[in-house]
Image 1 (tube, rainbow, N blue to C red):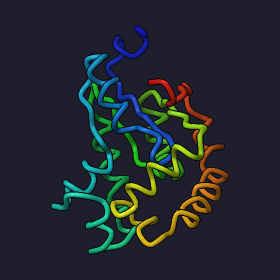
Image 2 (cartoon, helix red, strand yellow):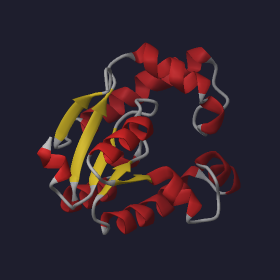
Image 3 (cartoon, rainbow, N blue to C red):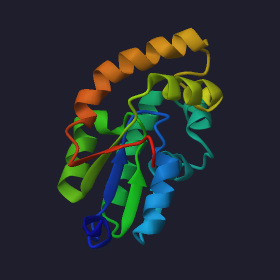
Length: 165
């Protein structure tokens, strides 16, 4: 895939929480000679926190979204990077505009609700929106958020199925 290795501008990997953006992103970055950046980690580390859950507990999700856009602007100025964005990053117009103007947006599409449910249930304590939800509550959350987010994700420059990568 020379399109990825030949370009210096940022590559943004977007998709639903639990679809594998960080895991697959690390492999793709290595394969194409890019530096991997997990935007969530980059965002909270810049404020002295180790993860999103601890940042949100100390501040709020609204505060996280404000610092996320600042972090996104910073990484958008870097070259030869592959950035795994948080599941909600692309859903904010300011963020989408930054990504669209500065790089290539790739949607990592996971169609299996069961795979998402399994991963998100297992990782629920590290995800503020899911922390106190039962498995049934997470299933409802997935259904609602997919309805909201997938139309945004599908506007990406490239769509790649997550299954099998």
